[in-house]
Length: 504
Image 1 (cartoon, rainbow, N blue to C red):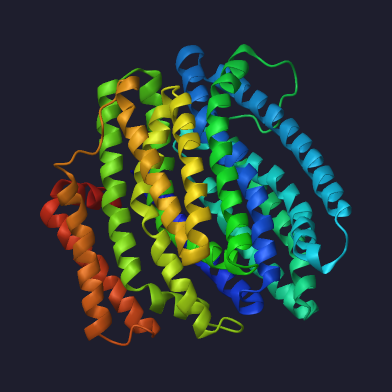
Image 2 (image 1 turned 45 degrees about the vertical axis):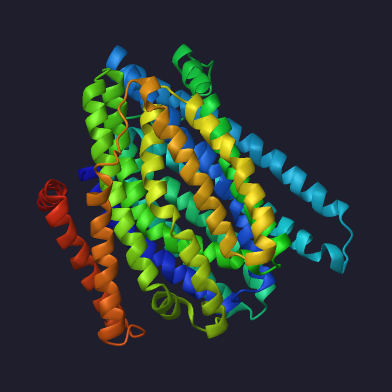
């Protein structure tokens, strides 16, 4: 709980800066085709970041380090970490070189005509953004020994640096030129600089826990080979998911319009605040505990920890989703209706956000269960679950997008993720864990969300103008108080545990 709260605290600042960044981008570039090409290109380094950065850390490295430390001592764990750094760095450099070659060859093979203009522009952005994956993946790996030692500060601070540098780059580019294409074309320099700073800021944290700062490029040790073999099935599942998300963006752009993926991009960005403050923070705090309990084979304690984590995620993410649905239009108006973002674009963005909000509670539970599987060395089940729902997601996109527009992508993703979560829950018994969410507990977990939504709705319709900062703030506070009252009445022990953790 302490790790989750510390991550949430610093992530709050990062997400506020992220909203400033998004609002600044929207005010300058709006929902233009150029912005759509940039957002699509940005999915590629993000895809590899989740695969080899966050994915490697959560799926393979932390459990492997915990097992090495439990079985052979900290010296063996440090040696394994240095080997992981060397291997990952070589892989990332190789991937970047191969990716750059593919992107430039692909772009040069297309004729410079109007028909291929958007594709060539997207490939141009992707080629310059791709090197970002090297520092950001190494940054994520550097968080493994820190989190294992219950140090969460520097890993939580890293995203703040990227947002600060990104915002500064936007300001500088906007001052230097008024050509939209040039402003976006030179933004990659600032993003790469932000990635390097994110990696550099991890060094004091790694040094502080006494782990090596330099990678080892020698022969792969037995433990490192075991960790890599364990990561292979997880990599398949992660790759399938990330490729599905990338194809999702491409389908939106193809079937709806060249600017349409901007709406899904900003809707997803709105989800990042509750996902990071609750879901990712809870997963970050829980993973070291899962890894240690799994290494000691304390299955009963792990089942209890998983149940408490899933219930907390479902409780808080449900309230966040319902509350954000009530204040969606005022929130989007205040955040994004500036410069080139006109009211009609906000009206189009709102139903897209409402469609994606269904993902929130499911994503929190899914993430916790996946990390429980991975900490026990069960990588194949999450991989199979991820691969199994990809065709469903893409088929739903193909059928629904032409008729219902961008919101259909949110519905398709929510349906696919729900089925994936059901598969993951149903297979927990195969690794010796109990199902953490029961039908009997669901009503008490859902009532606080209803209380939050009802109180926020009353404030929006009968309180101060929600399209003012004061009115929207009051609606959020009233909704939060309603959710807290519902939790105090129906989930009193969870409420007390949260207050105790906040006091400590």
